[in-house]
Image 1 (tube, protein in one colour):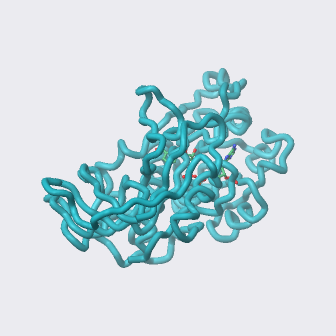
Image 2: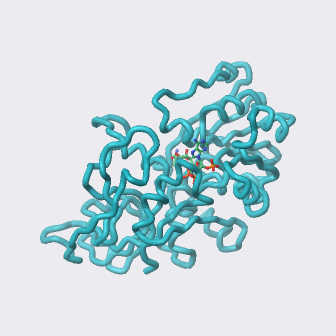
Length: 338
Ligand code: NDP
């Protein structure tokens, strides 16, 4: 049973060498007296929040750290091989937090979602039908309440969350612009996801000017994924009573000191609303979310790009690649298809 093991606590940007592949023996049956489930992991979801778990948190904060020497945990899609838990039975597919190994005994599977719809790719439950989907949906529809005709800006726009926010904005009839870190990603935004415009933030020496070029009349809604200099430039370009949905600030996660946002005072003059949100607050509405998102997926009105790496050995590179923008679309690792 191959496993992704955590070596030791990390400072700064995680490196591939902070993880390694180990092997354990597993009986492939539930231990005596277990109330859990035995699963075969199929797809693993590489997510930016996992870097917080690689740091020593000393028992505070939302996340508790990985244990050095132990397998890491993260979101994934798995098949139930055996169950002593009332919510699941053998043969079910589930998504949610799993131990990152080929086979795992999950003693507390209550928070896992049972997958009811298998006519769409199972890997989608790591992304568009999983945490990234709920995040994009909640942030766009419940937090920033963008209206038809409004001007929407999305950063990290080609990623797991951003590509969906852009498409939701187009379905709403908004004007939408995205930023991303390569020419290839910018092309994808314009040709595949239907963004009205897009720019490569790494090639713009003046972000405020780039935003002004794309939004001569200013931004109504900003879906914030990166923070730092981008946020500062966006605030300058926000319209009166604009809304900022703070989903993430990936550019800040590895800094010892967060970058100063100089334009924050403008929140007052411009009457800007800035609101953070967390995906799991919206999990109770998961079925409502599915009812809304499955029809446009089936009708081809929403598309989803995944960056699929093969095999458990590819996890270290795939996961740390998120922090260098290596992924094009949602980063998934496939261990098995069934
Ligand atoms: P992505 O698929 O977008 O992957 C991460 C991307 O972030 C990279 O591809 C890269 O794209 C960009 N990036 C990496 N480092 C930097 C940097 N220093 N400056 C600017 N951009 C950077 O990830 P997700 O879609 O899964 O997540 C997007 C954001 O949403 C993250 O901030 C994440 O933490 C947050 N999030 C929040 C949730 C919530 O509940 N609030 C839930 C899920 C995610 P590029 O090449 O374009 O730079």
